[in-house]
Length: 201
Image (cartoon, rainbow, N blue to C red; front, side, top):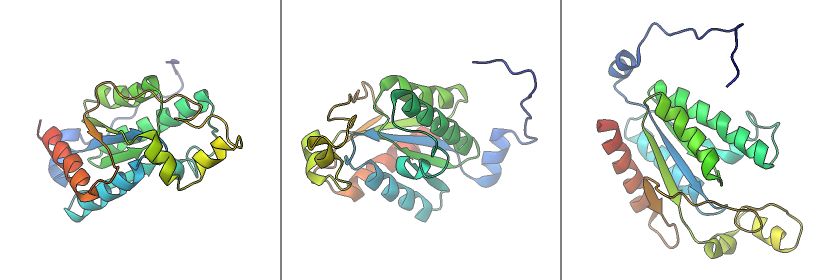
């Protein structure tokens, strides 16, 4: 990491414990990873709604949405993907530190990139939950809501994760879900239950 002499970290007058006690909520990051069309965003949207309706402050950082603003200067090269995940990892850390449940839904295909996001949260001693949405590629290609797999098969799209670009499945995720024919409410309950257990530690 580059040393900067012209900037200084300006601490808040509120420590995390005081902030969380005052707001009545403990922050955390839930990171959803999986192939395109695996159902990551579907689950993340439902988890966000369930948390908010239960009185929690939660916010979804969806991969496509992030690329409309914060990362609209990035493409899909390995370097750009890594930078996108680095940015989102910092965002989740800030949200979680503030007491918000940050939900990140990104393909994030490489283990090394996902480890950056986890390390940022771990270094700040914030709960980090990695949810691997392990829907098989055949099912993802069957859904294909954006037509990505069809374009890849036709040779119109290069570098699609799971088709002609690698996806490194998590080796030790905190939770594994498969959305094939699944009851979304049941999957949401698994995520929320795990979150509540992690926030009690």
